[in-house]
Structure formats: C-alpha cells, structure tokens
Image (cartoon, rainbow, N blue to C red):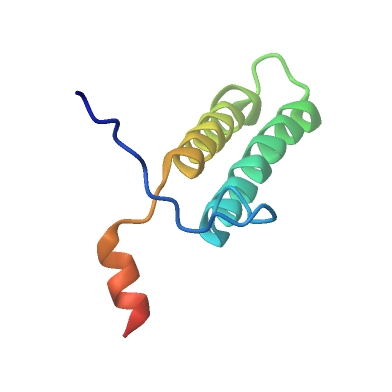
Length: 85
C-alpha cells in the first residue's frame, strides 16, 4: 500500500502568516521598485528619454524579479539551526 508524503509545516495554528518576515520585506522592496520604475517612466514622459527607455524598465524588471524571489524563498533547515543557537 503506497504511503502518502506529508509536508511538515512550521506552524499549524490557524492565525499564522503564510510567509516569514523576510518574505514580506523582500516583497515590499519589489513592489516599491516596480512603483518607482513606473513613476520614473511617467515623470520623464519623453518618447526617447534616457530614464524612460533604460532606467525605468530595469527598475521594473528588478522589482518583478524581487517579487518572484520573495514568493519562492523558503528558509533552509540550516537557518533554523543558526537561529536556535
């Protein structure tokens, strides 16, 4: 009879957060980068401006990358051992 694999959860209390504090900090940084990128693109408002063609898209891409990293980041078991000491 096959056994099902169960994932161990850190906290099973119903009021616990999905992510850890570090995830929320990284997510906030990513959202801010995206917002600043779009703001720079809007403020520059030039068709061939340097800021709207280079800096703003790079900030937006970096922000989206940061958001994906924040969502996928999961602490390793070694991090827990370091925190316990």
